[in-house]
Image 1: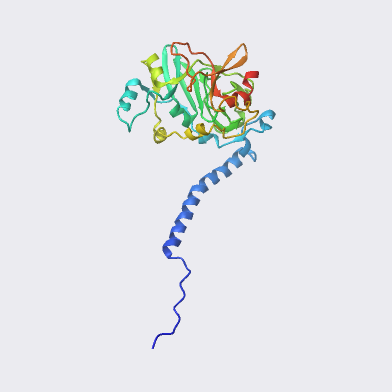
Image 2: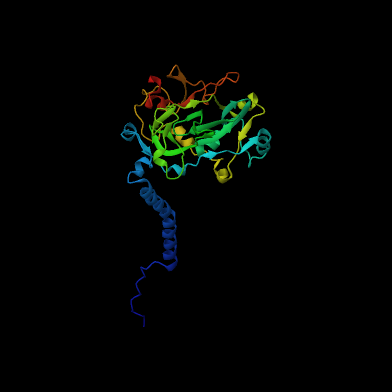
Length: 326
């Protein structure tokens, strides 16, 4: 006789290993998301209910009402460099002999500064991760800026907050017209006393120092090869150990290829005039900003030219910030 009993229905319960895997995944997601959430709650309690708009800064009426004002993160998320490590050319050349340790290649872009007989190169591959470097060169306190989203590069002398005490700057976590706003870092609990500065505009646009211009310092945005030929004894800002693993990455290459600014800006340049992210040299002459289209992709000046105070920024930023009309 054959067994006519029906076969047992298959169990719909997932195996224990799958439940365990889902539990681990949920735990990993919570571990990833809870710290930022707690940080956001702490920021809101410390900086006020509009912290997600202002980051706790005292905004001018015009800045607060600007439709292109964007908070992309907390000020601490992009870590500036204070008193950077300084290398000589020999160390850079030694690293270049090994592909795995290679730091700069001839085409690497650098911001070159020459003050009181001392040349120093600030590689963009480092600046793109920090955006702000507070340094002293030839006893002159300077700040070196590179903002990848707006292709803004500039160097200025850091104002004094007290005798022999220059301000230190950092990224504010705020953008206007997709351009970086930096802040003078006065210390814990003093956020509302700090000013917001636009390196693109060359002045403070909010806070106690509103309207104060930045004292621009001559620099050269060029290749490592050209700068080293011009200044064979140059110093170089080296890698910060905490960020060493990032410096070989190029996170902004797709952004540049798309040629589409990531955040709002207005007004826009004339359609078809130039690529949005093409670099432009902007100089201040008799209090007038003059836009001058660069003659190469690196916006480099002739090797035998004398660097002068200026700002390099993107074509879209010149129109959005109306630099050619100031």
